Length: 639
Ligand code: CDP
Image (cartoon, rainbow, N blue to C red):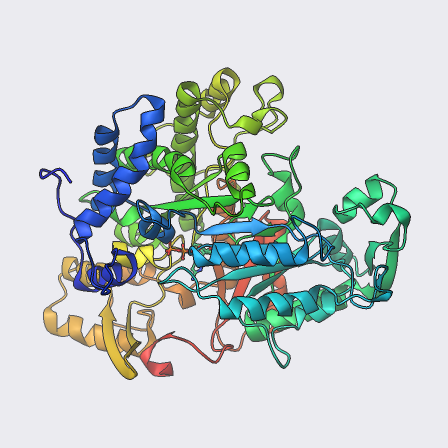
């Protein structure tokens, strides 16, 4: 590692987490690298692919190192653990196809289970659509028996994953999706609350526009599946829509009330936070490669729609490190970080060793070269800028930031296409220069505020694509940043608001319950700047510690109260509107939870679901405070 590179500055807590999760260890379990050496290992290993593009590896590695060591950008955790190590697998998430066939060589039920287990061992999470599996009880010709059905196989998968620990430091997250018109959907909706519940999967119902309209109009809803006894079914492994296209008849298994089914889903989410909803048509309207596949599933946390065998390497710009002295966004620095980060992620596509035993993974990755650049610390930037998360102004602010990042990421992706070539599957995609159907993204509402953002010229992007194509079929994703935001020292994860301004965190320390107290540094700074003395500050913090929020603290100046909102202070509608405002500029999707206060009704949750669909969100996850028994992070009053 070059001696002149700066060291990273981390809090004690961040350094401890990083050391535990990311440092390489020798045979005795002791770290064999320092924290700075870890960053250099990652920077160098990713930059090494620049060799094949005739670039100076060391110079590029230095630039990647500076980007990470300044905490301006972090890739997802697997890149830290996998780059330059024997593991070599760098992506957080994958989607695997499951065909309605036990013995099929690839995509068969047990072949996919094997592929998924191998991915899990490398620290990657998997998403699956179970929609192509025939309903339980349907005929199985070969054995003249009755089919197990998607929920039965989901249990098989769940059990298997329970036994496979994920790549050393991380344990498997998985996502199961079932379409809302699948005959077994009602069993699926409740599968996590019944006995022998599924514990290694998040579950989401794949919702169609037709279903949401049927709910609005209070219509009957058909649960259907292709006729498995029809001769054409034997070699058919497609979607419901494809069955209709090839003339394979659909069999209606039952008719239900769309509203009652919707109500069932909402009720479960209200009680349990699950299932979530994934809006299939919204996702497919923006599918960049519709000539390759229809999108049917996402990764475990829902922010990444992927085709069969695709992965996405995620990375997040830390907005907390892009704030000017006066608290406003440092646009120029965001631009610079975006450019380097885009190049970094494009290099990751080449540097990733994937899982050699599942060769389809590399193939799929290189074909579309998807990257997922997002953010963390949006809430930090909003605190500093004095903008209330959730307010109309806050929605616009978030949209302006995300639009800016997407714009510069696309420009860089076009420059990379010019130098290295467009993604191989560009022909027939929405970015095909010979038939460009991609349209520049637009804000949900016309902008009304000026936060000093430099001008954006989307026409330059269109012209660039027409001339050079684009290097990456997808560019933007907002990840949960569960680990990396903690290491980077952000107050707000991903695009989420801050959870609590002050709280007590329970940590299991070798069986002992350790209580750590936390107080928001940004809030503290605002109190100091407002001239509030130390004694009053302490009083304020003591009060905030009880509830997590400062909204009831009388001694606060109004501007501080208005800015320093936490998740529970924001209405569900505001949460949804924030999500939709950002989704408009994110071509993949984003990880966001719509929080409800304890006591929220099922109807309120239903309204949020409907609004999310109407505003063009690609999915929705809700959480009603207190509805799940185990809450790791809790404020003092509920402890
Ligand atoms: O912060 P970090 O990079 O560790 O990850 P994240 O942003 O919280 O999660 C990104 C993605 O990694 C998730 O959406 C999952 O697909 C995957 N993941 C997983 O499979 N298992 C986990 N325990 C955590 C994340």
